[in-house]
Image 1 (cartoon, one colour):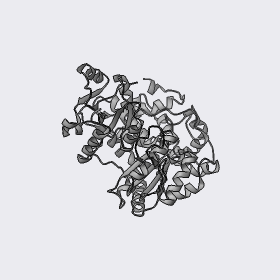
Image 2 (cartoon, one colour; image 1 turned 45 degrees about the vertical axis):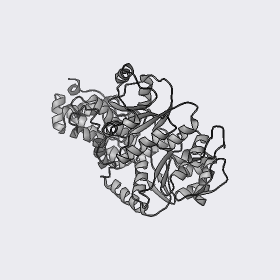
Image 3 (cartoon, rainbow, N blue to C red; image 1 turned 180 degrees about the vertical axis):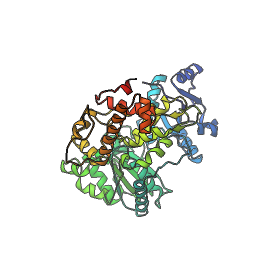
Image 4 (cartoon, rainbow, N blue to C red; image 1 turned 90 degrees about the vertical axis):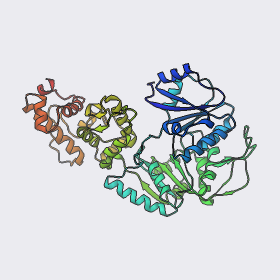
Length: 482
């Protein structure tokens, strides 16, 4: 596991302080530890950290103090709570308070903490806007979302993984009359069925071993506000039936309880699955689908809103990774970002930008710093059809180069189009035309620099494009071999 990069951690443990040797060991792993008791915590320290690791000494009183302080200062650090393995109920309560994760309270090595921190969804610390809606497609989506927010209806958000469904859910909440009330987000695929049931519906005292007090569920905590159920398509059939009852009756019954508790909530659900197909294979209830989809909003993949790509890339730039240097994405790099088809959507873009910052030494991201994700040699049929439907097959690391050539009659020795009467998607035709021009320029030139000049691009960009062609097994010309 690679070391964490420039992660600032606030360590709160009133019962046992870390020693100087331990703090140095954490520093060797890339974790900058600041240590304070909760009662002596300076505001500026809390504002400077990304992660807070807290071991509550008196139930969850200290955790409550920490949450109130972050709310007062309008801060959103990721919180990790350390608890004993026998404190199951407190662990559930801590998760319901919105902490990043709960870990066992045992002696954990700095390298293990590196893995824990790297696994967190850490909110970037910057003053840039949270949302990007530059592309006309995105602006229409934003206008639709804000209009739907005004009507208190249940909304189903669909779209591929990483396309920004939770962003839309937050906009629905923040643009609605419920904006001042709680927004509670929950991933239905993150835990076991029994734990999900307990967290959503809560429990009464004595309802199971270890249930020593009444615990309200997330539905109750979202009262007067909004609850966001992510990955609802992964919910078990048993929990689907209970969710349907909540939607129909607007009441919830805790585990082990008899009383129906009235709810005033808005429900937003999200899925990247085809729920209609799930209905046909009997893994999702048809009646629940129609309850959830009173209004359906689809978040398009990133490749369908190209004007959002560069603004998002700048939003993901982290000054900490650049160690105070100025941050800039060259026009050539921006061109490559826009031309890539982004099968992993916004999350993949964020990963690419993080890698580029690590590789860049001057804070300027050049084409050679862009490392795209590797994808399987052949996509599953459904995913392959989706790539063609959106017209974004490309040469390079997003798809199999060999399958691209086979599907689009792309010859190794001559990249010209085959004599086919079949119409190609526009983006495919553009890619093939680009490769034709590159090969023609190389054949007519004595050097790579001369070929790049003819093409109107830099030698560095040409080298990057040729690397993709080499992965197709195409012949390397003399101009490139130089």
